[in-house]
Image (cartoon, rainbow, N blue to C red; front, side, top):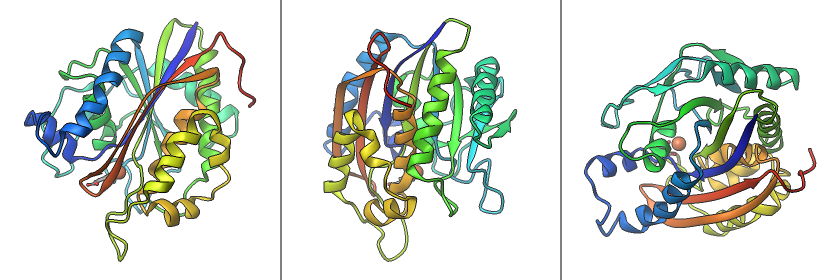
Length: 286
Ligand code: DHB
Ligand code: FE
């Protein structure tokens, strides 16, 4: 049987990939950010996932503003990285897991989520940056299932709906009849706004509240509307929806392994959270 071994949430800023490519780990600007990942990488190496389900937002690679699914799940045998113009070095394709993908799609549609099924899909920085941070070397020792949530074209799905999508996917993983140790990622955030009159906006008070409450009181964060999140965390801070979906997928007793918060990298307040899912414990209410 498959198990959800844990979840990691992290920012996905494209310039991180350039810093990795240039080996800027000890550079004074980057050091506090990269130091935060040491424990996360160590934990991933310890728990040895064989599959990763990634909640993230596509930034215009597969879907543009003219056609933008609220929820899209990849069911491709592999996912190629397409450079969106940020100068990220091209990496090896990610190995898919169509069987697990269809398990998740069947379950999510069964739970009345309308899913766009993608048998061909490219992945952008919101996928490749967190994978590069957690699996250094670019060999990708895991199979992947991308789950893209619209955080770009309004109206956006609500925090509560994204949390429930995560719950549906967590249950689908646990009822999968093949052996798999599945790690769930949520990427983006924390607070940031890249354009408009509030460009550069960051809300450290709200970010710290999110980092804290999402561990044991995630439902306290699902009462906001998506527009509330835009106002409180910035137009792109709403990427926190991906964190909530990740947290929803942790169906067991959750233990915090590690967190890091560093402001800013580029325009963004960076957050990192590593949660272990102890499925021997009491289940959280659906
Ligand atoms: C930045 C942050 C993002 O989430 C993104 O998708 C692109 C750029 C930034 O802070 O530079
Ligand atoms: Fe982003």
